[in-house]
Image 1: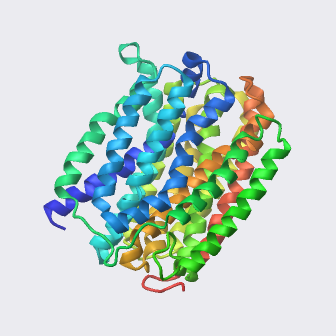
Image 2 (image 1 turned 30 degrees about the vertical axis):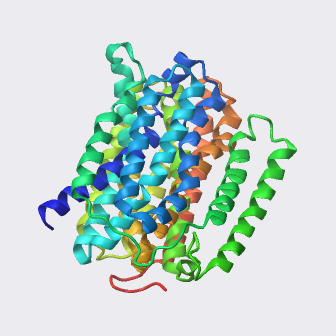
Image 3 (image 1 turned 90 degrees about the vertical axis):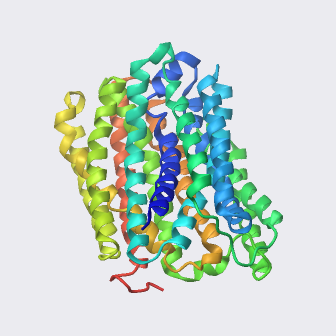
Length: 466
């Protein structure tokens, strides 16, 4: 891999880092944001859902736009929107403006992120490709926990009296670097046969996702009125209409290339990615609340807990990157089993030690949880996209990333059932500890489902699961 290719890879991974960081950077800053803005529990939830939902809505469209009009061009456009929105987040005076700016960040990500996996898929081959996907998984794993660490440290430091605002302002110089270096070093690529965007498909897909995710996010706030269930049912109908419309469009520039789902390698891998995102959205948001409200930790102490998990993730992701695809599905499945065992051990600790559990006491299960999760992301992406035709790389990457972000949005929404239903927004330590123990049961069940879905992936290196 030459110098220019290495710089291009660095820029692509940095763009991915910004996305994942901003999903989780608010987690350890939530109490400070609530204190300074007067935000309630429902508003806190929308600081994460308000970011993930626009991403989930727009990734498929963003991926197809990259196929049609240039993947580098769309990545740079998305980086401009994201960087501008980050500045607005840092300047926001109230929760309404902050949520709006978070939504604008999500729009920028929806344009930017599909181009990363698509560019890796079409520009690299063989071991270079597998290693790049391994590095992608490492960045994904590290960013999931580095975000809360940065959020805690920057909030606690209170630079210039800005409290939590630097967690967003730090994106501005990084985003500018991505724009300048990306324009210079990332090669442009498009589908060989570029057609017009399927606007009807875009409208139907957006409506379906909104009508499904919005009631899941808001239902608990309004005590699950009838309109929530009506919207969910209507969303299912619109989703069915979207699939039928896409079936009719096959061969005529559809938004969604449905033949991708005929192979169980892509469909099973995408389903596993969705569930993986769901359990991460549920676990990481509730974990930071448990650490600070259930155990009384400061933002810095909570950040140290995330550092412990990140150490494990880095080790697991390093193993995945070095394997370069040699172990096929056995590697991520092993990581999933390790995580299940560690979650079980963590739950037993919480039940036994209650309020006396310390950072040192939880270190072993937390590091193992990170180690297992770190073995999943890179190999899962590599094997899921391995057989995708280059002309559909953007759409496939958009679908794969949509699965993750939609999963995160739904996982965050599930906090209403799995966590806030017990605490009702109360800072009571015992309530928060009990609620988190319930969450661990949910997360463990979802991990078992991810493990099962991975049987759709190749059993041996070089095999095809289709």
